[in-house]
Length: 313
Image (cartoon, rainbow, N blue to C red; front, side):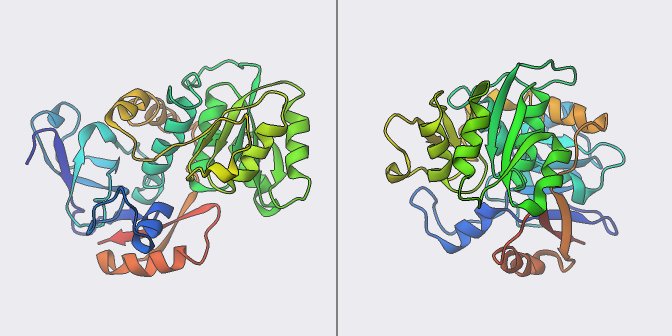
């Protein structure tokens, strides 16, 4: 086993957690040209360290409770993990709660703080206001829930979209202005608010790329759009700059955002209780690996403001 890898399995009586993400469902149902099949799906996990390589021993020890990001490798009982993409779970946080973060925080941090995307200043516990706003499209999604908190922690006033039933949810995470994405006037309403001040850009966590790009097009500020969804030329009006943020990115992107994720702000903010577990986890199966497909089928029927997880006992 490589010396820079850690492996964990859940101890008897101590459940580990495997969450379900949108990309898992997409990769199961669609053949993508940049993916080599067959693959083991699964991006997020939380559990107990079972073995530690010599390099990883500087950060972890056997028995540590950890959460981690792994690229298409997580739907297993034993999972090799790059130790730089893992962190200890703070006391008081359960496996289920910690498991909601890895892919969400990685994807959000790439789009918000990556130099090839919005390039925002990193969040901190004592951040001051930048005097600028940021639009996060799809704020009640798993990625959007974390993007709101990260942007707020970086000193931005956050505007977001979601359905009316999630308005209170996203406001509790730090959004100051919320818009119903189904409203026929949502684009004009958002533009009117954004153009009252200076906006740093648009991050589309989930939803319509075309709608987010229309906000940029109609705004006098011609805002850059960083999108978690594929960007098709037909969705981007002339003069709008939009680019897809691929959640698994490259090595340089991981290094660039580690101070926000597994190597810095997130862990510190969780430990001090100033970062919320969002979305909340919902255990939908306790059948271990055999329950993953059940959870995937539930996910494909539609999920909002929660993250489905499977217990590995």
